[in-house]
Image (tube, rainbow, N blue to C red; front, side, top):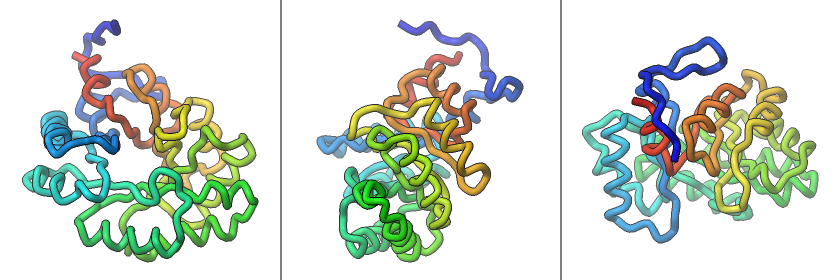
Length: 235
């Protein structure tokens, strides 16, 4: 069992200090299990309000419920698109983006067309992302590249495609294809995107030390279903 860290600030990037609240504001509190019930979503939103996470991330069909639960808070609504494979028709992805926006979403995490990337069809990959961005009309788009399915060279190409399309974030994983966010992947992505876009680490983040290591490596945001557990390690 991990012992709580008994101070109110945690060290990141060697010198910067984060308060517990500042760390919470770097987390998308996430529940994407297909079996998640209405009660589960309500509890997710209660936890988000209690701990002041940056957002809650739920499936589109749960956005209405989450919006109602968070109506008196500043917590943002995030949802996923083309999830979890990314192998959807571009027109379907664009239509989904529009419908998510109509439902009140404030950020969208879309899955890249991984097959097209492996076909080295980078033009299609970029156009797929751009179609979603046009439909979303300014809503920040985080593009999930599913690092566990890619070689190092493909991770670089995927990240470059996200930058070319002008999306807000490269995101590591869905959590549905095995593996998870790693420090090595975050460093690799950061090296190749620089300040051109932000990075979201997601997939298997379950501890404070893991969360801090990913942030130190260059992640700007974390996605986790274990957000409360992570914060509980700080007194």
